[in-house]
Amino acid sequence: MKNERILISGSGIAGQVLAYWLARHGFRPTVVERAPRLRTGGQGVDIRDQAIEVAEKMGIMARVRESAADVAGMRFVRADGRDVARIDTQAIKDKYGSTEAEIMRGDLVRILHDITADDVEYIFGDSVRGLEQDDDGVTVTFEHAAMRRFDLVVGADGLHSTVRRLAFGPESDYVRHMDHYFAFGNTDSTLGPDRWMTVFNTPGHFAGIYRSGNHAQAKAYLMFRSPRRDIDPRDQQAVQALLATEFRGEEAWHVPELLEGVLADPDAYIDTLGQVRMNSWSIDRIALVGDAAYCASPVSGAGAELAFIGAYRLAGELAAAAGDHRIGFRRYEQAHRPLVDRKQQIGPNLRLMAPKTRIGIAVRNLITRLPLLEAMAGMERIMAPRPSRSYPTTRCRQRRSWNEAM
Image: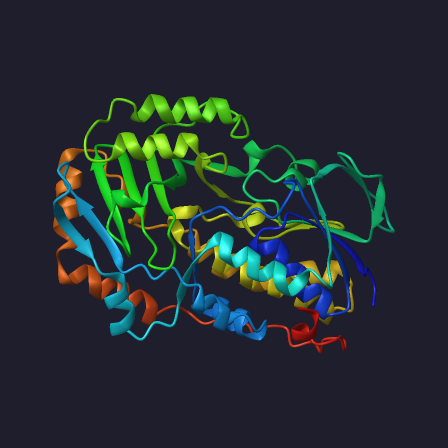
């Protein structure tokens, strides 16, 4: 086996799924994570379609279903809290036989860490600072740890990927701003009914509270239309000031309380709503996976799906090529890109969630009351295409039982 020593930057969904499968195939993955501990914040993510198959192969799908968010649907309300319209997504899933599951991101990354911790080297509180490739490997400079050599490096470090910037070029070449900013964080659970995502709109603004039936902690969601601002998303003070400026004048419904909750949450997420578009996901011995390579944006609902399938394919193609990165990286991209291209076509989701005008809000509310919306959602699930080619089926090296490892 060639190229056994593989560094993965990022311990999110894509990074940990990749680490799992690389270890199963006999590689020696190391995961480096900037945060001092596992990042367990985040919103609900969907495990659907072929991602379910991958999760089942990993033996975690039963745990995913046990930890499922149990949200019935989305309700749109007036300023006084009365319903304008509802979308019962659970009823749609039941009607069309959907087997997908929604789980909070934090619960999912904990499950993934449980099954990888004994077979994968994790380095927390550090990050990649420099990458130098040559014919035999990659020399990696870290912010804190000593310099190390790896055979391959994979960036699984999200929308603002450091590995992508170091190896491929500036972020502005690849990240497309979608004319919105998006935020979520913890909030008071008494602000909305259990098992519903409750949404209030004013023109160009979205405020919502997400109440999972299996979690005591509620999540606040805020979104607003805006051209790209000259703000570093890693500058928390700057992005908090931007969010506060946009929503401080909103006094209706529970908007002030939701804003207060997000601004007070140290783990809140505030960022541009963006997509990553790249002509290639690899350069020599460095590759990208998940949001770092093909972020479809939170409104796509496809981030976890693309992460699971992409990481599984990448590890499998490397194993099928006996570690030859030139073959493995090329086959990974050829197999996965058709799904990525389809999932990055957002359709009407964004316009439905944050209409620009009061007329747009009224039209959205009318649409949500029509049976047509339910039929469209059902057909999307029925007509979801199968993979363009079969998954790699290379035999895993014999390792001790994952149950024993846990």
